[in-house]
Length: 268
Image 1: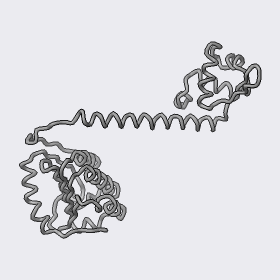
Image 2 (image 1 turned 90 degrees about the vertical axis):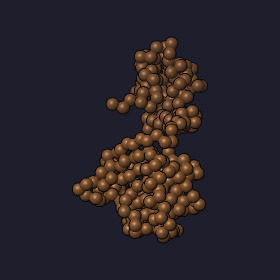
Image 3 (image 1 turned 90 degrees about the horizontal axis):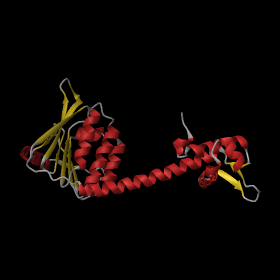
Image 4 (image 1 turned 180 degrees about the vertical axis):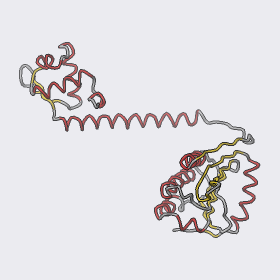
C-alpha cells in the first residue's frame, strides 16, 4: 500500500501530518499526544514538515498552533520535491558516467577475432544499437528489406538516432538501401532522417537494386549481419556480430563497387 514514506517523509513526520488532519488547528503538546511522537521530538518534526510546506503555523498565538495543508496540495508539493531530488540525482549520475567513460576506456587488440549473436527482434536491435554506439571512425549500413515483425517507425527512429549520435562524434556514415526499402519507410522516419542526418557532410545515402542482404560494417573491423528465419525470409531470426578485420575487409571490398554504381538519395 502507498504510504507517505514513499514520498520522502519519515515515520514521525507522516504520523504528525496525519494527526493534524484529524485534529485541525492544535498545539505541539496536543499534537504530541495525538500522534504518539515524543515531546522531545515534536518541534523538530514540525519544523521539518513546515519546511516542506505541508503545514502552516499561527505564530501570534500562545502557545503556537499548527494546521495541516490540504492533502492534494501537500502531496503535490511532496511530489515536486521528489522530482527535484531525482533530477539532481540524475545529473550526478551523468557526471559519474562522463568521468567513468574516460577512466574505463577499453583498449582491445584490433586484430583479435571475436563473434557473438543475438536471437529475436528486440535483442537484435539492442545489439545493433550497442555496436553503433561504439563506432569511432565509420559506419557502413547496407539495408535490403525490413523484417515484418518490426515496428518500422520505432526501429527506424532508434537506428537513425544512433547514427545521428555517431555523426556528432565525428563518425562517417554511409547508407546503401534497396529502392523498395525507401518506399516502405514511414514518413516519420524519413522526416527524422532529413532533420537528423541529411544536414551533415559526413552522411552519404544511396540506393541500389543490387542490395540483397542487410548488414553493417563498423570502423572497418566489425560486421553485424542480419540472419533471416530459415522458413520465412520476411522474419528476422538473429544478428551475428563478428569482430574480424579480415572479414570486414572482404565485405568492404564487395561493397565498394556497388556503392560506386548506386544512385544518390536525397529525401530533402
